[in-house]
Length: 133
Image 1 (cartoon, rainbow, N blue to C red):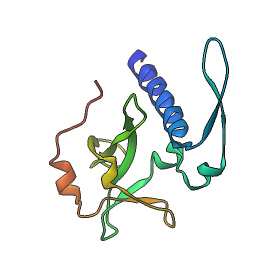
Image 2: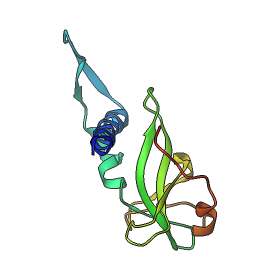
Image 3: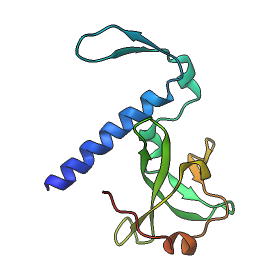
Image 4: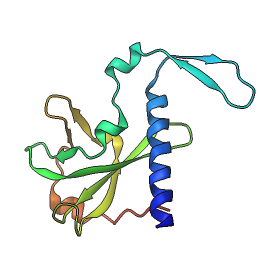
């Protein structure tokens, strides 16, 4: 139970960091204890919200469903490194997590899907399982 709470807490913090990283133009507002920012929302018009990407269907270039985006892994410098994809199973039961470079995904705005060109369910299933550290 405690580890599930820690996982959800870590996930919420990561989502907030991704949204802040997507803001290309921010103006710092002086503060004593924490740095507060006023976000210029104009660059966000072309940005993607992590909360909208997480759970999205991942398809290959033949439009075959190969998994669902489970999570995003970012660095302390706010770079999105990996996409964690849930593969296999049925309705999330018996599925496993694998990580692929985030840069290998293409975002399809029209269908709200993520495209991983050249991937197959079998190829993703052969990747090592991803485990949170």
